[in-house]
Length: 438
Image: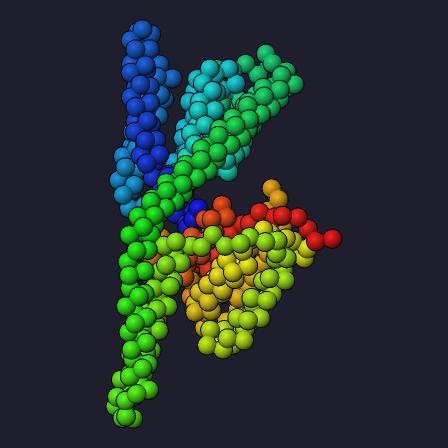
């Protein structure tokens, strides 16, 4: 399974999920305000009075909500930071709920449950952290409102809310505030956890869907290309043999020698491409054996460091947990690590740095990371780097990472990519452990 991720993708992914939810929230707010308006008109008609100050306050509040809704709708297409925009809207909704609670009785109001409604959709849109922040903000407002209502700090509030300060003792008021606050936090945690779990599930489903599409594509290409590659190898071998015979038998001619060298060089290159493509199309099953991961990676890194064409002056730092064994074909492990090192070395500049981490994790697995501080990968490119023959380099076949993907797939592993332009890239995968060295 392949997972693609850039360093900025979490915030972008959140913004993508918030965008449609925010649209539905604005629509729901308008519908709620319309229902509130209808209920107020019915209440006023039954009351038979047009001078009731409570009704007037409710009409002012409804008008304010409608105006805010128009402002939100006008700003919505221009906003890029949807998370902040959603938080501001929901915070204002919480304040509006406080006004509704105030003008309908404050401590005695039947509409304190609206705080929970706001906290629920805050958790749905802004996830657990946003829900908790709105819960804190709502709790502070409710506590301040009730304290002001039953003290002499703001006696006008008691008059507006029609409260009776002498009717209740402070202990009961405190109990009501604590219960309301606890309910708000409980709702925030529960709805936030459910929303987080739903987001993780959707992410896994999206990843699985992309993986299945890639597997189907590779399976089709593999079946078609394996036969074609075999057919290319035979005439290619004949061509190389013929050129070598001609080179030995013909009288020396500098021009002919140069042309034949070009033919031999290009046929070697074509042969390498065909072999790589065959490996990609039908990876050999290999012969799994128990390997000491630390020792195996150290050997591969030493060989890579001696390859001056690839390693150049790159510093390779290793952080490998000792005593970890994996059941794997040594050639497959070498192919994986070598291709990831090569990819990292080509991404960094002179005196760049590559880090290899191999650490034991839960579920009897070991996590391997190859990290570079190179140029990074753009978001529009990271989705296609595992496609066969895709490369951004002037040289290379574009099959290296595709081969790594196919090998890891055979070991039920998953390859993850995290990258940020100008800062570097991290390739990581996990392998099953087969025990420890004692």
